[in-house]
Image (cartoon, rainbow, N blue to C red; front, side, top):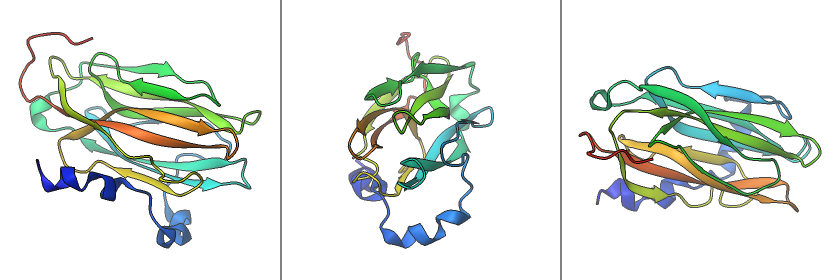
Length: 191
């Protein structure tokens, strides 16, 4: 077990107050209350997700994403698609079907519930299978905080997430599902 694995909760927890002054410098994919559609370039996977909460802006978050090319051994994605969608105000667990990796996110804001619906863009790398999967701690650790996930080590990929919504605080906490992928062809098709 690598040290990065053991340090996982520490490096995935939300930032303290130091980062909040410079949240205006980030390249956000949305404005408050606006929908967005973010996709990594072909052959890249999502490796970082950041968000900043504002109660005065509809209890919504600004979102920022980073991608990185997948290792050469994984090959090219043979297929990409938008996976299942969640409804605003509800809990949601989504893992890319067909062993896919998360390569994008789209979201739409709903004023009526002060929440968003979510959908992952997944890409399939034929005959590769996930292993050594884990779930992160809650991100952010507390509702309404700044949130940041950076995949802890090269070779881990985001496969999905489990998210809870607080009807009182009007915010979400996320546990991301991270996996490694085999560097050999699996003998079975895991659907």
